[in-house]
Length: 361
Image 1 (cartoon, rainbow, N blue to C red):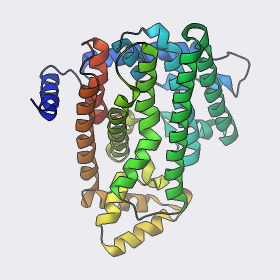
Image 2: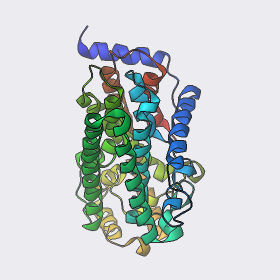
Image 3: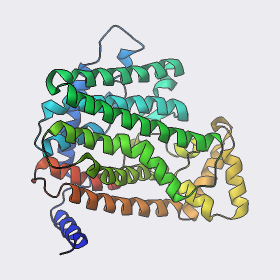
Image 4: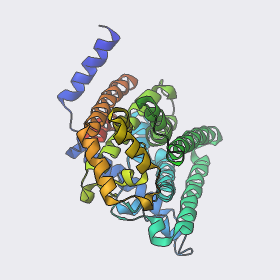
């Protein structure tokens, strides 16, 4: 049997007993990982001393986020023979970094809603929101330094190096996306978007949690590089699905501003597809729209742009690419974990692929 045939056989066996797409066992596992992580996160935040600092750190976590990143860290550690108590500090740090990114991202994008409520800067002002995001980063670093007492200096330092690598990639990815908006870049290709996704989304949302979880598990034969392709494809599929939901989701499920990406002028895969397939006069109009500040754009213009995306099949094209990336992620995941004994934790990691691509929020 060739390597490709072996991969396909593994994928076929996986689908024979899949319980995903938010199925009961996956959702129960995700809820348990999330509750464990968020309870520890909230319990570790200084209480009652800073009304406009630490008291606001738990606001986004308590609004019911998915908790995917901390869950992946816990699941990978356990799948490779570790235990949850060993990984909990790091899972909490990962969720704190994530929520700090959300707070700062909302400020940078001028977003209005987050997880069913007003964004922190809309509620308390930009200055307070930025400071709270910084506090979340500080608490994340505090959690990682606490690892020394039971992980030892060497492993704690390895996790710190992974964290530095993740932050470097994430900040560079954010700079790429913000630069496209700032300079009104309209000549982009699919590969440009996927590179940005690798830097901005894949590293901190998937590659980093998987690699940290593997480090925490201790002795095993897998190398950290085995999770890079899996996490990259999974992160890109996740981001494209998120962008699609921003245009076609229901607010009650999605929890963020529908068509917010159009108001913000984000260079999503759908917008890139539209710019590369529309007529020249339409392209000039789109470029003119994107040159405006958010507050200068109108409902009529956003609706027009949304209709163009539908008419040119841009949303459908992006969804197809997300599905292809999810398929590639599944093959990479099956390959990386092939020698790992079957367990609920391993199943959760693989089930994450279809959850990511079929989720509605």
